[in-house]
Image (cartoon, rainbow, N blue to C red; front, side, top):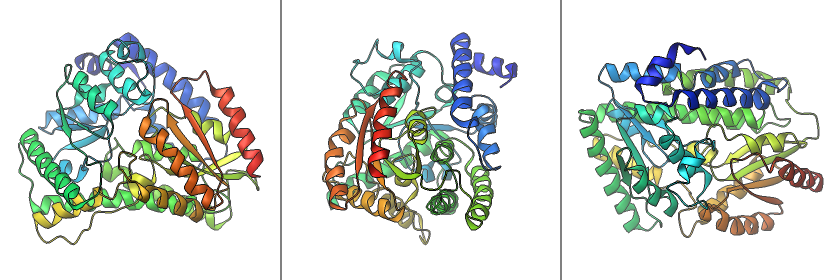
Length: 424
């Protein structure tokens, strides 16, 4: 990334020295984890480019859109309906962060035993490191966990945050609560953008987001091939970038990559030696640049062929019905689709258990690695029931709890290698 963006970063009030250090570390980290791989698809060059310009060209695009009167909406969760933002002429970007570089600032206002994801996005704001946060006209939080819910109260002292209430159960009354939240969000977005959402606008937005989901669904179907035609690291990167790249451009590039991937599958090509253990990741989301565990797994004699997480199947599995004749019907379709999300915030959460077992069987995995961020209680506690469901299906599970630090890499590698040896 060139220095031509420094004026833009300065206008966004970033700490230029600390930000330069972040980009330098990110570049080296990316090189070690991604560019060292063998047999990568040519289509990954686009993803490499996007990541290399993560705080450059994409931020300039957002600033140019704002100069034309566009509004940027930042989110932390897959529960926030992007279709509504797009229908109002806005641009939605993900704000979750996967690095601990702002940890020191975050721990001045948050307890140390707060999950790394929360400390990361709060730290990025307080340390003035994130041009996405600073570009937003509206930031949307949600009540998926107590930690995030309370952290938004502190976060909102530094930048305005609108918080959506997420139901904790899936009874008819909970659906009504969720519909009222979606309608309230629609009003907030219309006020922020100055645009009224029309039936035609919402219909086109639903089709656009569904088209991206279908491209990622196609990627997942091709990944299911045996032998594995793409690394789990590359697939994770694709899913991560889907949260902030232009949706139409991203979808076109992923379809091109899938064409290449389909040819590789047809010829029996693979990125892993024959007999490599097929594993699936399950649990907490992995925001950029949280690539530690996939790197450890794929450096330990295994290949990741699927992710049961918000950066994976949970985000792409379900589509919004496209046959709505009017605005009210389409809103109902959005409400129903997002209520199908099987986040660990729900109780009971048998849907997630069924989906994990079904996905593991479809992918013909030898085992599941359940990933939990330290101090993430919903996923840590639910790991018990996940393991029980997988055991009943005769599928081994390894439970990993870690944070964004690199101090435990060797310990994790030892545990993963022992698990891989066991399932062989």
